[in-house]
Amino acid sequence: MDREVEREEELGHSDIEAALATRRELGARYDAELVDGFAERIERAVERRVADRTALEQRRTASAGNGRTRQFVLGIVSVGVGVPITIVPTVAAGGVSGVVAVIVGWTGIVGVNAAHAWQSREH
Image (spheres, one colour):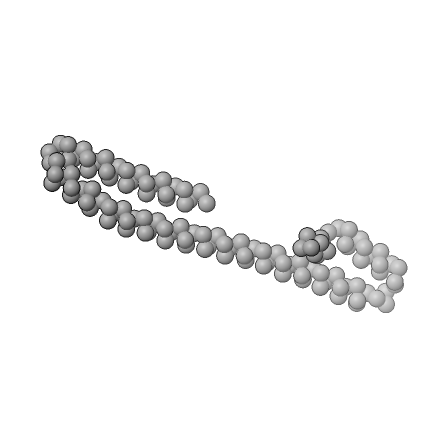
């Protein structure tokens, strides 16, 4: 049903030709009514297009805001997880093996954050 309404409100070259043909048939005394009817159709088409664009912008804005919030939360969680990943290997293993464990742990955290940020930018 919505498709039929869209087709009725679509304005094209054939609509202009139809209005001119109607004017020729009815004569000049119906010019005001023909112009008013055509103007109303144009207004409806413009309003529909503006509403469509506004809705699209709102969806884009909401999506971008949601992605920033998720990225922020992921950053906070990463720092929270990073503290024990740094402390435990340093205290328990110490030396070179502790440093390697910390590097591996933080590389994983950075990888997860980078993958999330990259994925969020694509959408």
